[in-house]
Length: 245
Image (tube, rainbow, N blue to C red; front, side, top):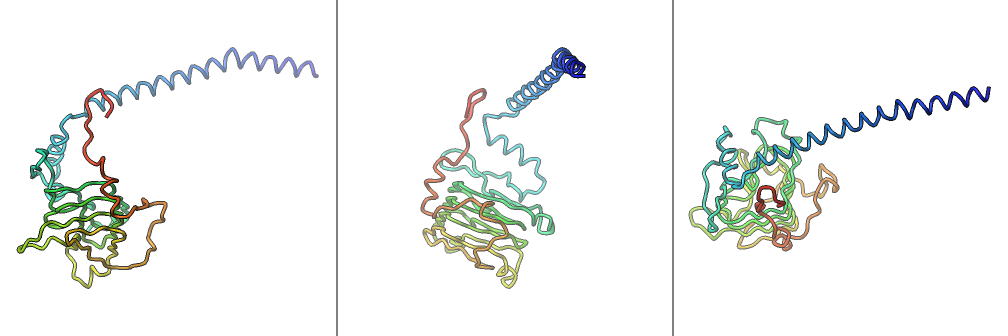
């Protein structure tokens, strides 16, 4: 009986090394070839999609956007000669689309400089954590919203534009399409922000530190005076084809 079991094991080992093992190796090799092909295809697609002039990519995108308020196709020319968009970011499809209430968006480590008008960002519904950004000389407002979004501004540096007798743009915030009794219920809080040149943030809603998301879901903010240091590398990448950025 022992001899029979030993012979059976020998036969099984023989079958494994002569039939099964080569088949497994063949399947693995085929699998590796498949992913190597996918990698090559992805590389080709990435090189084809690359465009050395980011402004042209944005212009092409703007032509495809039906809502002109989403991102304006009009541009302003900054002192550096680069083109900047006066309306920066709009989150949320519409005030009537309550499904967007599930959104959680973080806007962090950006430098919003001269020439920008508004929407840095503009928020509909959802939860927005605006953290450690630099804002300088906006034209109308920096952060706006409608449809009762929750906005937590932490550790940003807001430098208001010069005084204008026609339009007071010192206010960071703008609450749209709601009466004061309505927007006072929206949670818009400023914590650790640095206000300069008369900038001010109109807070509203619940002052409690309790949030709908845990601290693990939010970037830990540094105080506002750190924002210029944290955004030193903000801006477009200077990339060239077939070279690392």
